[in-house]
Amino acid sequence: MPHDHHDHEHDHAHGHAHAHAPPQPDHKVHSYYQILGVALKELLVEKGVVTADEVRAAIEKRDQITPAHGAKVVARSWVDPLYRIKLLTNANLAVAELGFPMTTTKLVAVENSEEVHNVVVCTLCSCYPRELLGLPPAWYKSRAYRARIVSEPRAVLGEFGTNLPDNVEVRVHDSTADIRYLVIPIQPPGTEGKSEEELAALVTRDSMIGVAEVKAHG
Image 1: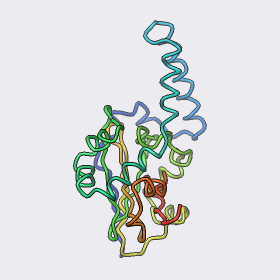
Image 2: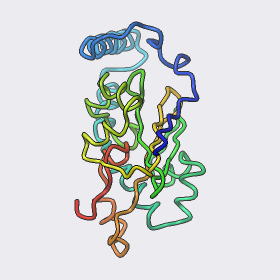
Image 3: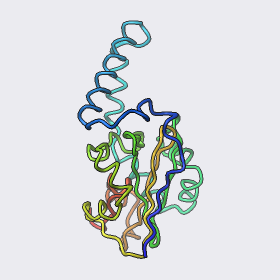
């Protein structure tokens, strides 16, 4: 029988202001924090802490981050065994070497294998390795995904088209305000001769969250 392991050994409350708030519909939660964000921006600009141009530049810089950053990390780990070890040992240091520093949160890389499949969630909100993957998809932030991937991970993975053998252990990693996870998917068979750039083109955002697998042909 499969063993569905949930990696929940942490306390969200220290980093989430709404950790003990009653559940709210997704649209209300997102609307509240959007309004809060706008109010905070306006206050900082009014107080002279930042300028409107600095805020706009920061947003534009963040919007330019795409899953291609994470794909480069995964591809390097496939072609460079020493880099893969470094990534699994000290992910922050490893991704910084490729020009993707994560200075405010700890990054943990988890590697899929023939025996273990990893998938990532943030059960309380939408903590996500944005420096590597850009903005999270809407489904990642939804209450349905946040609840169901913990209680019925195989069913949810199946809805994404990822049907795992019964002997594969599923590990669900719950992100926190301090920790982000990056899934290192299995390199698809038949791609051993491809270049690092060609491999990176195969790696998808969903495979680095863990709800999908990498296919030999993108």
